[in-house]
Image 1 (tube, helix red, strand yellow):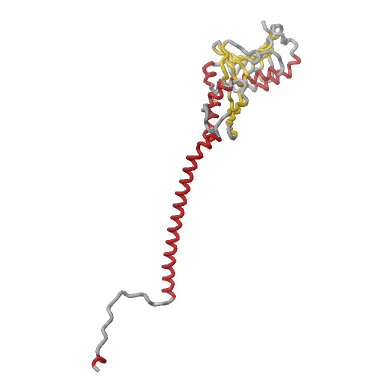
Image 2 (tube, helix red, strand yellow; image 1 turned 180 degrees about the vertical axis):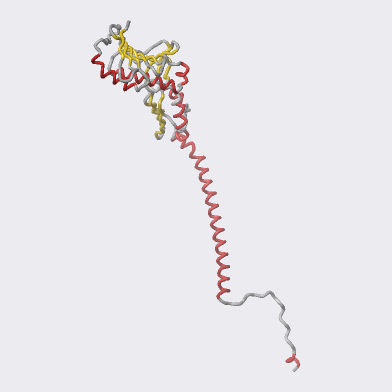
Length: 285
């Protein structure tokens, strides 16, 4: 019975296998399986997104390639409407707008056209609107002539804010008040000081024109002493508010029996309003 006493051979040493079971082992296995599943899903999701973006880019490219000409034809400008133009020629507005034939509405930069049109002296404000499908509309607000400025033996037409609208040369417009004594360089450069003087002269013309008919002439050589001439009578205004000075004259006007507005200089022909709380009337000689 020799074989009964023989020792068994030891099993070869192998890496230890975690074969034990229990809650911890099951949890580790579950987490490993979930990790693999999550990675597979993330990879599939990224693949789907990439493929979708590629397909979309291709679709957009094809759309632009084939729909571009159709869109251009659909939105091609065929009519340019100009509204509110009275003193400025329509063709001049079109030249300023610089819209080329065949341009699409979607290619028009309305702000640029607005600035180009408003560069014209007569244009106070411009509005540019796209009207589907083939119309571009340009609506103008023009400046209104308010006075004729005589400077350096030339006449200039201005609006109430002192903006020069055009040169009249030797021609005139007797329906508008005439301002003299204005610096021509400052007028053409539209300096703020000159514009204020012009605005004051026009304001004075409106005040006097509400009472007396006939063309008013204003000498604005000295801005603090504006001189207005109407119907042969000269009015001198000081630095106080023009409206207050004219209102003072209106109150005492009925008592000024010697003041004649006949344009011939008979009787008193100068009214000095420069002094506070009193009016000086002088006779012409």
